[in-house]
Length: 252
Ligand code: GLP
Image (tube, rainbow, N blue to C red; front, side, top):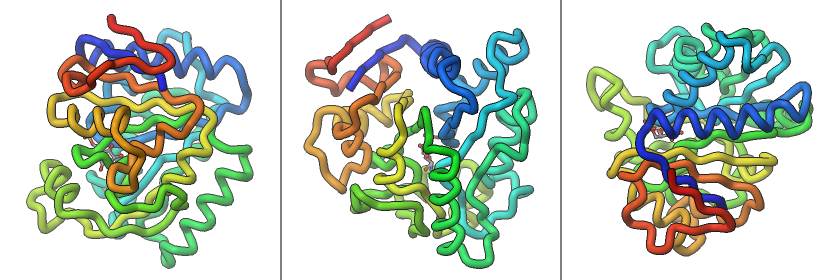
C-alpha cells in the first residue's frame, strides 16, 4: 500500500490526476474506473484542466462507474450518470458512448449487473480504479458485511449511508433504498487502485482500511490484499494512522 498525505483537497486532486495521467500514457484504449461523491471532484477538475490544456487526451478512454442508485433515471440530478456528465464527461473530449454507468432504470437490475461485469471483461478489465470511502468504511456501495469476493449486484443501502447522502436530496425519504454496485471482488481485479479521502469524518475509516484487520465489516480493508493500491489523503483524514507508512510513504 502506498500512502500519500497532502495538505488539502486541491493537492489531492493534483497528485491523483498526475498518477493516473502518467499511467494513461501506457495503454490504448485505456479503461478508467470512476467514482462519484464529493471527494473525486478535485480530481475531475484537474482532468478537465489538463484536457483543456491538451495535456491529457480522453478520446480513446473507456470508463466504468462503480455504482448507481436503483430507480433514478439518468436525467435525475442525483443520479450518478447525471453527476458524471455534468462534473466530467461534458467537459472533456471523451466519446460518451465509451462511458458506462450502471443503468438505474434497468428492467431487471440483477440481469443488468451480470451484463455490466461481462462488459468490463470484454474490454480487458479496468486499468485504474478511482475510489472514495464512506465514513463507515464502505467502497462504492459495498456496505459493511459485504463479502470480500462480491461481484456487481443489487444491494440495500444502510441508514448511515442514506443519512450521509441525504445532504444532496430534499430529505432522507427521497434517498433510494437500493443501489447497483461493483463488488469488492470486481474492484480488486483492477490493475491499479487509487483511494481518495479528505476531511476528519473519514479519519477513522482511513485508519481502519489501511491498518486495521481485513474484515467484511470494513469493506475498504480488502484493499490491503491488492498489490497496487495508493491512498491519497488530506492531512485532516490522516491523524488516526499510527505509523503512516506502506511500501511507499510521501508527505507533501
Ligand atoms: C457514496 C458512493 C461512494 C463514495 C461515498 C463517499 O456512498 N457510493 O462511492 O465513496 O459516497 O462520498 P463523499 O466522497 O461525498 O464523502
